[in-house]
Length: 180
Image (cartoon, rainbow, N blue to C red; front, side, top):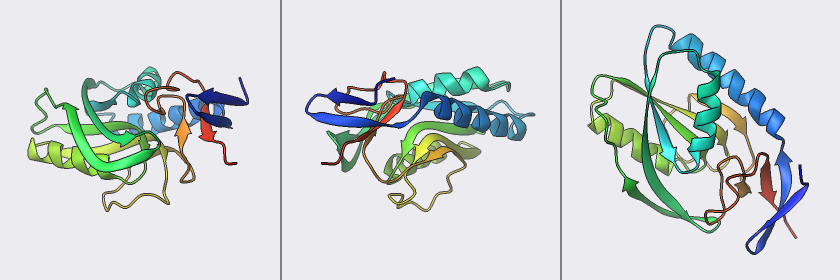
């Protein structure tokens, strides 16, 4: 794969290989399989970014599960706006169900908190999160993060579902914004 890519006006350098990502996702799937062996959770995919992670995770899961999607937005360019916008809301009944939120990245935790509160209000019995990547330095929430594929530094990244203004999601590796 390419060692660097240019997306719009920014250059990104290769940070995490697709092989490393695949191994982390397979490990997450094993853990989820073991903890939900007698359950059939609902996997809540956050569009658009978590689609890539969700597909890879689902290929590795052996449990019975149902999937549903929501779409929220909190970024403009490389910065979080600090405000969560619901673009597509929850359409499935989660009352009394165990739900695992699937995220491409957890940074500040605002999106996770927003989704957690939405699911709690809808009557979910148990709410957990599985994320492909997490920025522990940026996390400001108090909710537990249950399943983390890869911990990364608080740098802007693209690829494998992560984007810069909608571009770069389709990159198989993860790239970090090049520092000048």
